[in-house]
Image 1 (tube, one colour):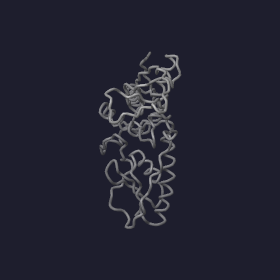
Image 2 (cartoon, rainbow, N blue to C red; image 1 turned 180 degrees about the horizontal axis):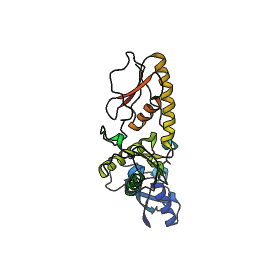
Image 3 (cartoon, rainbow, N blue to C red; image 1 turned 90 degrees about the horizontal axis):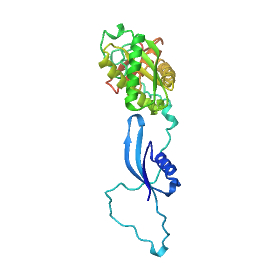
Image 4 (tube, rainbow, N blue to C red; image 1 turned 90 degrees about the vertical axis):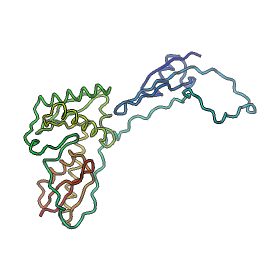
Length: 286
């Protein structure tokens, strides 16, 4: 039987390619998975052996052999070609809003108020230094080059561009064929990638400048929803005179809550807990 080996991103694509090369319909192929590799950010590849199955006469019903029991083969078993699901639209969806615990009586619990000193993902806190750091265009170019290098090593087709510089933060916009892989469900992959970039940047540059990664405008959508949620919750806290605690948020999202509520009268905010379970507390002002 003629056979070939094909490598593609999934079994379905590899089977289709093998059928074209062998000049036969895909259902007439016997496919054996030889190797399957899972890459970074959901990228994967598979290598198969495809051979044209021999035509067999259908045996009479009475002569149909019973399946053998308890047998195991040392070789890879043939598998049916199953198409992998396409990435779901939720890969660029905005994460659900953090929930607030029931408002608690007794006022503030003596925790230190935290606003400007909230550190972004992948960043060590260095009191007294951050306020003096101002990112430059050159810092933005260095971070963009770092991101491009990381994407190249990961085998992803992603372009990075410095979009905004604010204080020591450089917002880097990601786009390209594989940009959706870097957002992920509820922004989890984007947050993890940002953490990794800032860890590398902290060790390589040691200048206090940090990157904020964004893809498919996820950060802005998330920021708008956080601002609306925090403002509405703060109004309830002020009316009841009882504080409320949000679910755990990453540092850059805690900054959004602190900032939007910083000018609201009768309200104060602070953070408590340890990463990754650090939470924002919204409390009545003293």
